[in-house]
Image (cartoon, rainbow, N blue to C red; front, side):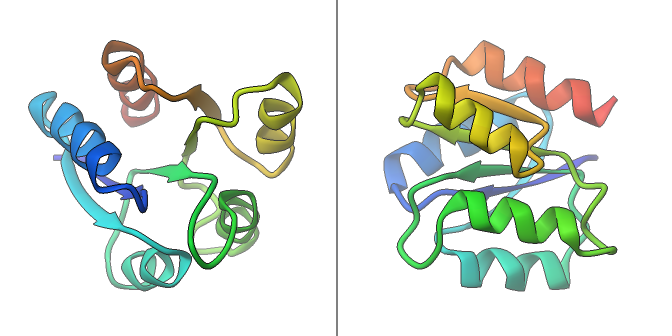
Length: 120
C-alpha cells in the first residue's frame, strides 16, 4: 500500500484530504507544520507529499525546496494544495520543485487522479 504525507494545518482540510485518499486505498500520515513534516519524513517512507503553502512555521514553498534538495527525499513527488491559486503562485510552486499544484477548495476526484499518477 502506498503512503502519503499530508502537511496541512487546517483540521477540516486535513480531514477532507486524508479521508479522500484513504477511501481510494492510500495510507495517510499527517503533519501540521514544517517541523512535524520533517520529523515524519525522517521516520517513514512516503510515496508522495501533499503540501499546503500557508503553514505556521514555514511556507510550503520552503518545505518543497528543502524536500527536493535532500538526497533521501528528492525523488518523492510533491503536490502543492493551496488557496493561493494565481498563475504566479502556481509558477512559483513548480519552480520550487513541486510535481503538481492543486487549488483549494480541493476537487477530490482531481486530487485522487493526481496522486495516483505519481503512485503508479
